[in-house]
Image 1: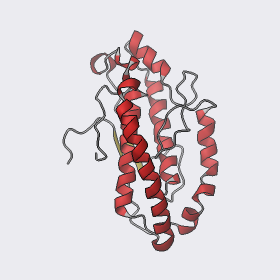
Image 2: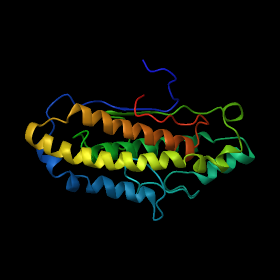
Image 3: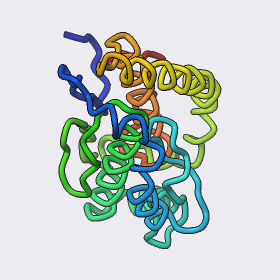
Image 4: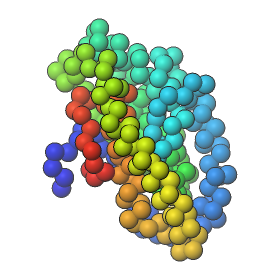
Length: 213
C-alpha cells in the first residue's frame, strides 16, 4: 500500500485479455463521435483538461461549459463555499474526459460511456471548504503548479510514444504491454492530481511528483 496517499486517486483496470485489433487499428476513426461530444461540452474556448494528454476538452470560464474554474475560485475566495453541483459537474466531466482519453490512447477497447465508470476510476473527495481550503490559494494555484506543467509536457511526449508502440503491439499480439500501460496510467494520475489542485481546486495539498498512487 502506498504511503502518504494523495486525496485524488486515479486508476485504470488493466485489460488482461485480447483487445479488439480491428477497433484498435482504426481508433482514430472510431473515436470521432465521442470526441465530437467532448468538443461540444468544451465549447469554443479550450483551456485545460487531461484525458491522457487530450487538452481540448475543457473551458476555464464560468459559463457552465467545460470545467468550471473561475466561478468556484471566486466562491472559495469570497464566500468560502464550493457549491456541490459545481463540484459534481467538474468531477463528472473530468471523469468523462478520462474515459475518452483512455479509449483514444488504446488502454481499453470499450467505448466510453457518458455516465458509467467502466474500467476508469477517479476519486475526488468533496472538500470541507472552510476547514480544508485556504481562501487565497485559488489566486496562485495555477502559478504554483508550473513545475508540474513542465514535467507533464515531457511525460506526455513519452505517453504518445508509448501509445504508438502499444498500437503495434496490439495489432500483432492483441495485448497492451503492461509496463507501457502502467506508465500511461501514471501520467493520467499525475495530470488528474494537477487538475484537481490547480483548476477545479478540490484540495490544497500540493500534488506529488510521482506516477504511482
